[in-house]
Image (tube, rainbow, N blue to C red; front, side):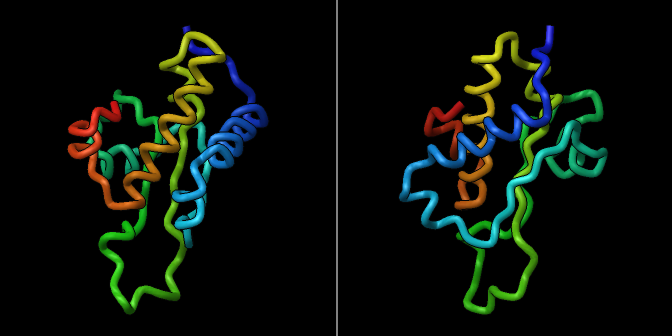
Length: 126
């Protein structure tokens, strides 16, 4: 059964996860915005390569650092979106929600740094 978590509490968990990132990563986050939505749109699911009935916990959209060139500038911020209802759906306890938010933030930030899902899997990140 999914965990019930208010939007306010979820936002606090996201802020906490960002604050707890090692300085090495926090200091390199530039032109990025973290958003919260309840559910992904059909377009976001498609972008992530998922079917409409699959859950998406988070999504990075933007230009990874490894692909930015010298003419990078005057662009809208990259975004990381965490999906509150999806995360709640895969968790059975409030503690699992905390852990999943932290894991999802780290996962999406890895994409910002140019690390693919395949590489994350090789590294044992999930």
